[in-house]
Every structure is written in C-alpha cells, then in structure tokens.
Length: 68
Image: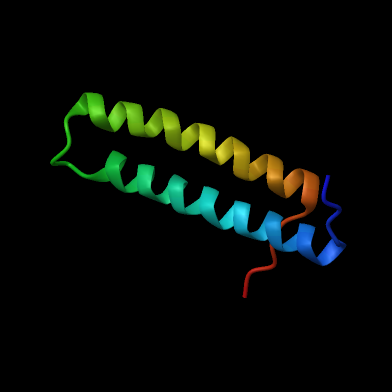
C-alpha cells in the first residue's frame, strides 16, 4: 500500500473537491434550464443536494477552501 505525503493528500482532497463542485454545478445548470422536463429538473435537484452534502462534509472534515 502506497503511503502519501501530507502534500499529496492535500492535493487529492483539493482535486476531489473541485470534481465534486464541478458535478454539483452541472446538476445545478440542468435543474435551472427551463428546456428540460420537470422530471429531469427534479432528478438534477436531488443529485445537486447529494453533491452539496458531499461538499459540506469535505469542508467539515478537511476545512473550508480559502476563496479569494
């Protein structure tokens, strides 16, 4: 089993958060697009909520990312 340095772990967490935020934003876009059916928007809102929970957990466990 590979051992990671603290810097490698921090980079992994940062990348995981970025991917999760990107997916959350994609679902948000689908949920706000009036061209999509109500069913599609409803599903997107559900997934968006799940990804928001993941983002909140990442922030809670590892600390909130500093934004500029």
